[in-house]
Amino acid sequence: MDTVTIYKGDYGYALSYTCQDNAGTAFSLSGYTAYLVVWEPDDSNAHLTGTCTTDVAASGTCHYDVVSGNFDTEFKYMAKIRVEKASTKISFEPFWLDVKESI
Image (cartoon, rainbow, N blue to C red; front, side):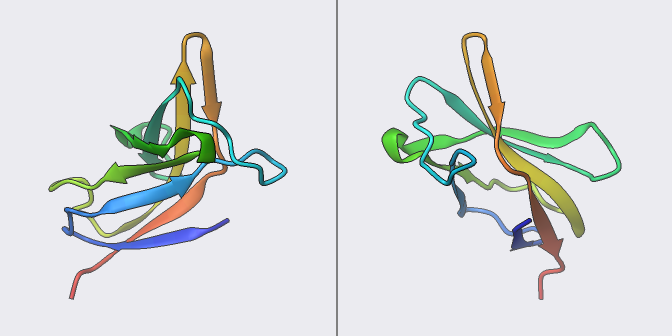
């Protein structure tokens, strides 16, 4: 499982992601809305669910723009990209989102 490291209190940057199927092929985001979902490993309640911007739908690329207040606590969260449309909801491979103390 991959780990993305970010720093507590930082904002104004994008977390980028490429949605892929199990074979590693790009998943087309055409018609889908993508979300970044972040939660504590021992808690099923989401810390953050934010709408992502689709960059290139056919390539499965999207990003979440981090804003002030998103990650103000040092913690190692679980995260995933979830896409939805009509009666479809698909979650992609989760990853660690490690919020470290800013120096």
